[in-house]
Amino acid sequence: MSGAALDHRLVRGYLGELDAAMRGVPAAAARELKEQITAHLDDALGPDAGDQEVAAALSRLGSPAELAAEAGAAGGPPGPRAAPGTRRTRWRLAVAIAVSVVTAATLGALRISSDAGNTAASGPDQHLARLSAAVVRLAQDLGDERDLSAGYAARGRAGPVPLALARARRATDAAAGIVRADAAGIGAGYQPGAVHALDGLLAGITDLGSIRAEVSSPAVPASQVIRTYTANVIGPADMFSAAASGALSDTRLQGTVTALAALLRAENDRSVQRAILYAALSAQPPVLAPWALYGLQQADAQEAADLTAFRTSAGPAGQHLFADTVAGAAVDRATAQEILAEQEAAASPSAPLTSNAGLDAATWYGDMSITIAGMRTVAGQLAGQITSQAGTLKSDAARSLLLTSIALVLLLVLLTSAVLARPPRKQHAGTPDAATR
Image (cartoon, rainbow, N blue to C red):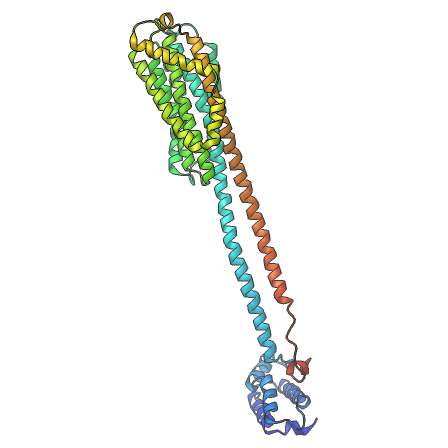
């Protein structure tokens, strides 16, 4: 060991401080540490090293107190100590990795949270869309049952329930069963307005038995049969359809449901007209009483208002579909028959419609049913669009959530790999790192 470097006053002072600091360190560990330090200094410093070079070499080693503390904590001779430059490099590397991971994780978590929210919202939307389609069918079947029941009551309820009415009741029961099944789970987490409207509809379905008993009662006129079906069951169905549009989270879906709700109201208005005039033509004598004339005119005016609402929400495509579908000779005949009946009733309220105007109950019901069937075709297409849109929203949200999660994992891996792959800063010859390696 050369004595020139170790005789330098700065080295002697450093080693003296080291001896003092290692008084509490086990002898073997203290001896081993001092031998490593002196060997390193002897190799690193030339015989002509100046004060600045010596001071730099000692600074790279760290303070004697730090070295003694490390040796004492280890309980034995420490291994070669990394230079401060190496410690700083490792610290910066750790900070870089941490910042990259936290940044990517935060941004990814925000996107995942958004996608998860969309996925969660699409589930209720799909449920409401499916239920709305079931309610559409129920309202249509109820309309047929109501109108046939009105004609049956107007004829005096002679004989058993007609076959057509029996079939309509079975169709209503089947549709009601589907609505009940799809209504399960609609409650907490859904908008209160939609839940309340659904409760009203389910209560009306429960009352169907008593409503049908009323149809068979001779004391109940046809006008009351029409009002009972409309107020207790069909009205609540239309209310739910309207409330469902406000309970949806997707604006495009809302627009389609709003258009469908307006069309259903217009369809019910047309069906009420069918029921009133069918009951009048089925009665003996076949006259359109003042209350019936007023009800017919009111339903016609309400239909015009609801069709305006439908056209506004359906847009050009929906308008063209309606115009092309609800058209034809039967539609024109039904319109002409209704106008003629209103004119005859206004001119001669007590005159039989079949004798002066040549109107017939079966012909009227058939032509008006064709008109209503066209409206139902449009409603069916809208209901199909709603179901399809809701399903697409749910699948898109789930796919986005999956892709975002995968992208986040890949981003974290790439960021970490990029930081770890950075080459370490090259050490100059004579530094402690080079000496201890």
